Length: 146
Image 1 (tube, one colour):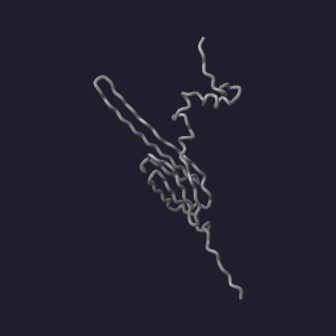
Image 2 (spheres, one colour):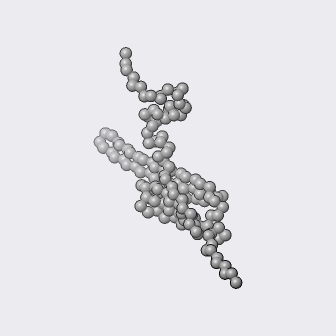
Image 3 (spheres, one colour):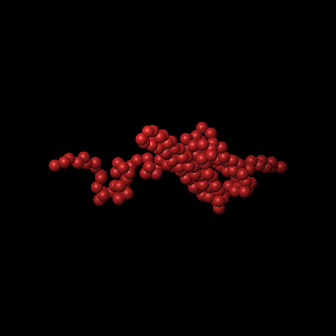
């Protein structure tokens, strides 16, 4: 008789099938971890523009692809690294792919006809999306009473 270690909650009638399969040690690694692949993002609204900050360390500025089409902003990145080492009777090859893709619907106040500024520094991608003139916050007007 062999002993099998029991992990509570591993039976499919207690959970959804996806949760049951996802707890498996083989599937629960970095390759299948979808939450890890999505970088954190901050969106700030200023008087004249929107600023988006995306935490994406380990990439180079050439790895990013940023598009804006029909009111949808799409930010994606792909980094491929590889190494091959040949010895007398074997070849060792290591490779790694790191990628993500985020899409978001832009508000109607973003002026899509103007240039979007993008800069990548110290693992942070920053985008500046200009607002339409009518959407910009106008200074308060003081009206004097006569």
